[in-house]
Image 1 (cartoon, rainbow, N blue to C red):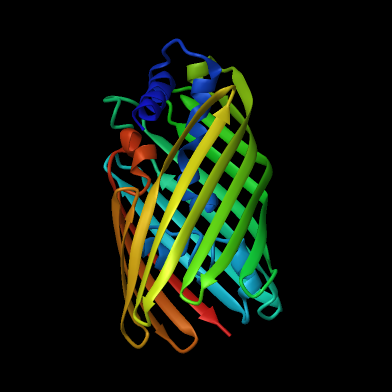
Image 2 (image 1 turned 90 degrees about the horizontal axis):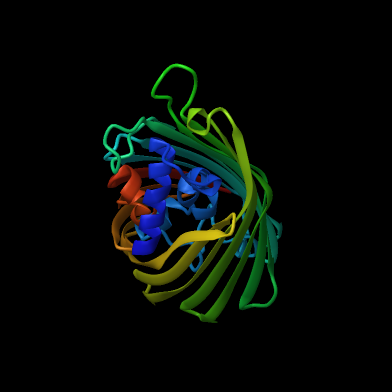
Length: 334
């Protein structure tokens, strides 16, 4: 983990101080939003359990294989705010709708995500100019049940746009602005029922993007590169009893740009306890970061809340500092 942090800090030094460096360093900043956007998003219920992605079916599912298990129509709205010590505040809004094509055999999900931020400081560089970020994505999921135990799914992102903006320290424009557009993006998912109470899940992401950067730090010039971001996640959940669910998950994310690679990997773990009919409490660990949540379900409506401390800290902690995330979600099914 330490070589990766050093690489990222070096990148930011070049970005904000205009030290002599190569073009790949300026472009690396574009990936700051990725762990918070659609490839890394999950439901509020699963955020409270440590940010699970693969091995627990839920409404608004992140694993496209679960589209093959859908038996009814469902709509989900989700909103979260992540406040960093450096002042950056990420606001993420996500909506999704899912339904069966053949109930319990095949189905689909459409989801859209919008991320923006208030400007904030790079804490590792005192006196540096503030920066802001943004991203918006649309995803389409299709799932197919192959057998009573196995389901497979495919997700594609026909629309993907990303920006990182370092505000100008003097009149004349931004110090730096990066933009990324995806030329290809897809997600593969699988889920397998090992036994009636134990489920395995896996997700693989691959996004190829074209990134450009311009600004005062580059002397008004524009530089560009093609990049590839990949993520692999696998996990297992087990229903200990009718009132207690536990899960563990491993993930690895890498980004390749101009012959260089950087990324992150780690573990997530969590549990969910049913306290009363329709009321649940959750607690989890997201690669060393604490999470907790609560949910209430009544009839066709469910409302959930999750709290995360230092979300994706290995990736952005050295840049923006520690963070607190509050996430809310409402779901309706019919």
